[in-house]
Image (cartoon, rainbow, N blue to C red; front, side):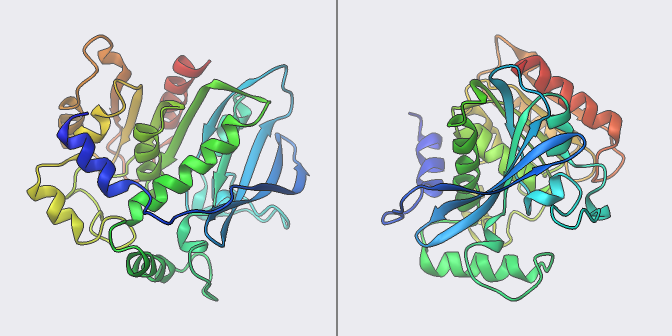
Length: 300
């Protein structure tokens, strides 16, 4: 294990004493026109739980490919409220979980830790919840960080897929946009069960986006920079895993240069690809389609 791998794992590994009983409890099933859905409650820490939503194709003829789709909360990735069916226009065009289910994937997403780590009466869309949760996590676990928590919680989503008999455990991928792209990148690089990664405009460079916010890395970004650590090393830790980046605003040609520094892609340079649509933060439909096609090539 090289020095950089040791340093990354030291900073991201769950802290000592982070012990709890794993559980996943089915709460409700839903039937929609394009897919079926199942809502679960999953333990994600000592005394805390995350809502986890699975979305399944209407017809499954055998173990299917699967994708974890991390984001703020799962309904955003299907584009409507489960109970009222009210649409969520804020997330129109990036409903990766619903899109992939329509392509034959079993998909899963869960609440991010700003909704689970501390109790709050603030609306789930209120961004102040991120600061409150990030500061609380740092107080409780000074040697951990928000990205470590996000990666750990996303691996629990992968657990839910890997342990599902309807899923082919050798064909699990991960996809995410923005915050979800950060979560997909970290979990995808660290979790060997994830076979392919699609990430959209998350800002792979330290100065490209808000890695310094307390709910991600906080002040430790400067430590990482001084230690010569960057995300090309994290991508190298995936050992040449297929990775497709949709660049648009925060990611750009500098992102491509960072990716090209990653090792492990000598035999399959096509496994590491970038589409820079350069049309803003939200990917257009044709760019997302290219990302889905990338997952199809590696998971179907």
